[in-house]
Structure formats: structure tokens, C-alpha cells
Image (cartoon, rainbow, N blue to C red; front, top):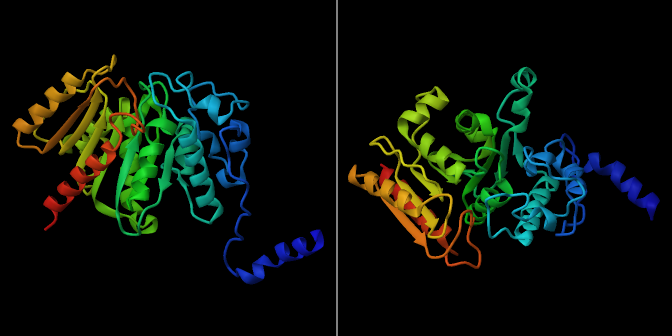
Length: 323
């Protein structure tokens, strides 16, 4: 049997001429799979380490269950190990199926000149070909990037609904610059990526929400991209942040927060959206009773399903902007 398998493996190039040999599918990960095992999977090449916060000490011996706690993702709640495993399995299966799941946003030359830029990139959660895209930005207090709870789940759910979604891994000290570069990268590679470059949305929680709001602003977009050919986001979707700046240049904004958030006051968020509404900018706000900071997509909480409301808000803004 081993000889037969070896023969078939060596014959694969005959069946797939001019293309890449498909990667053999490995067993699904579980909540008991370790971080070290996941990082070493061939499906994740040299970017597997970016699945987990590089600015936090996450031992390779930790299982996904160990990782999915507030001990790793500080300031966050409602972290679910089963969702962590689902996300890793999705990305692994996509990669093993021949679909690229990670894109650097800086060139090799730029990363050689500044090695911190190797800690950046976009994880791609594919939707329908030609569908609009969203960029999801996790929080972490500009200390680390809590993607596994605060952007990967959002991107995965968006992809399930047919949208193309990118989860940005950024440098906490250069977050706005990295988001600007990510938008430039997506714009310049839209055809290759199979995304509609217009009518996009920016999503974020906590620190990531500040990033989304800042580059959702038309002036901020020009400042951090240095370009005039990138359109303003059709919508900004933001969660649990005390960001209070408001101007007529801001994008239509959907926001939510928990009433027991000890970090970001829901009243501050509501006040900002009221200011945007006063400028004639479409807004929608939800305060969820009893929820603390960092509830993510809100599975099995009073906020469950909020992502559908946010998508409807985004779609309405896209339709309003269509000629």
C-alpha cells in the first residue's frame, strides 16, 4: 500500500501540469491542539505565528482552549474555544485546498529595511467572487492584536454571507499606517483578489474601532494612504470604544457597546453618533444591557445577531451610493 501511495504522489504532476501539487489535507485541529502544532502546519507556511498575538507571550504548549481566555486576550470577554478551532480549521482547509489565505502588505525590501513590518499582513476570508470587501481590525489597547476573538470571527461570519473579508494584523505602534497600507494593497490587487474595490466597509472593536473610524474619515483616509484614488468607506462598523471625534468628513457609522463596559462608555459612543447624525451622516447605535467590554460577535448573549444589523446598515449605505 505504501508503494502505491508513493507512486500516486509522484505521479501528481502528470495530473496537474503547470500547477501546484495540492497539499495533502491534515486532520482537523481541536480545542486540544497546541499552538506549536498549529504554527508548524504546512498550510500556514511562515505566517502561522501571526494567528496568535505576537506581542503577547503565548507558549507553544498552550492548547486552543488555553489560548481562548482573558489571560491571553486581556480586556476581552465571551471568548469561545470552539470558535477559535473553527477559524483555524477554516483557514487550514482553504490553504490545503489551494486558496491563498494570507497576504503581506509590505514588500520584501520594505520588510528587510524594517523587520517589524514582518509582523503585519491580511488574513483573507473569501466570499463570492466580485463581492464587496470589509477590513476587520481587532483591538488590544494598541498593546497587541486580539484577532482571534475580535476580527477573525467577524471576518469568518461575513465570508459565510458572501462578502470578502480581510482581518488585518498590524503593529500596535503603527496601526493607522498599517491600515492605510492594507487599503492600498487591496485597491491595487482587487482583480487578483476577486473583490469589488468600491463600497467597502471598515470594521473594528476597541482600538480597532478607532482605526476604522480614523480611516473611515475622508481626511484621515488621505492622510494615512497618501492617495486620492481610494474611495471613502461606505460604512464604518465599530464596537466598544470611547472614540469621540466627529466631523462632517466621517463615514456613515454603525456602533454598539455593552452597558457594563468599564473601559468604553456606551454614552460616549452614543454621543458621538448623535453628533454625526447632526451633520446629516447616517448612523445606527445599540447599547446591550449588561454586557462588558469585548464581547465580540456576541454568541449566546443579548447581542447575538448584531452582525446582521451591521451588514444591513452597510448594504443600505452601498445601495444609497450606487448610481
